[in-house]
Length: 355
Image 1 (spheres, rainbow, N blue to C red):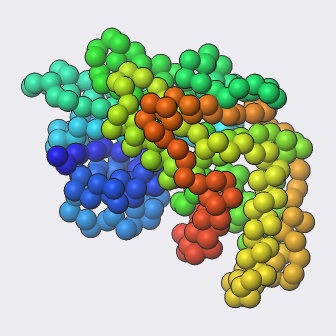
Image 2 (cartoon, rainbow, N blue to C red):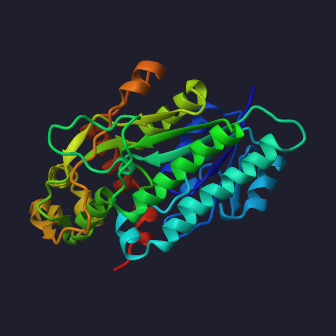
């Protein structure tokens, strides 16, 4: 039976990828994308879906509880997938208020709307509220520590991760207090198409193509577990299909990399593409590869950011054992697909750059 999904943050990086993934997998389902179109929300991410009969875009804020309730009723939504969030740690350090507003108050507004429509309305119905969160709520790991597991103590270290931790607790509370049918997933660092160019991978990729410095915090030794965004979407799909209500699932890519090693791999792959395709030099004349130089020459170490967690790593054994999850991309294959996408979609990323 076709479903009806409300996807918050649908014009953002992961939300847009999820909508494209879901349309390919379930073409008969109704998709409603809600997005406030703040700086990282881009309706162009959804261009291929616009005009389809079962796709609806709504420009609105998740803090608007009456709007969310109206959408749930109007489209008979049975599944809400909540991606909308302020997510850039650096911005949370310089301006935490927006993170509290969107990530905590916004999530609570969604929960209240879902409760009013799905539980308190005329006849309770089967439903699912899926909350997408981050591994950063667990804090930082030391060398040799096992990866974060679902029973891990929360130890958020930035305003961003603290706001996401609070939202995780609200979702859990609405299940245990009111009976809302919820699931939560905590993911590692995502990368892939439509990634806003303020994050490490798209920032460095677009900077190489423009011949700009590649800023690396500290000595580049910080470690992250990288997850290709389509693998993340597959994991959420499994949780929605078979995940236990009220439970959380960690979704990771089994790809721990030092930040510096990521930047170096990105540089080397771009150098190889410039060497193999002379047309790239004409398209990107400021890139080192256009003059036969190495992209690694652009690496520039900068002062480490405040409270920079040293290592994140996901233990995805639960979702693997219970739901059959396994990432399909290695970091090398995923970064290759990401580079190819950015090379082929300059018209998308070029207008987003400042300076």
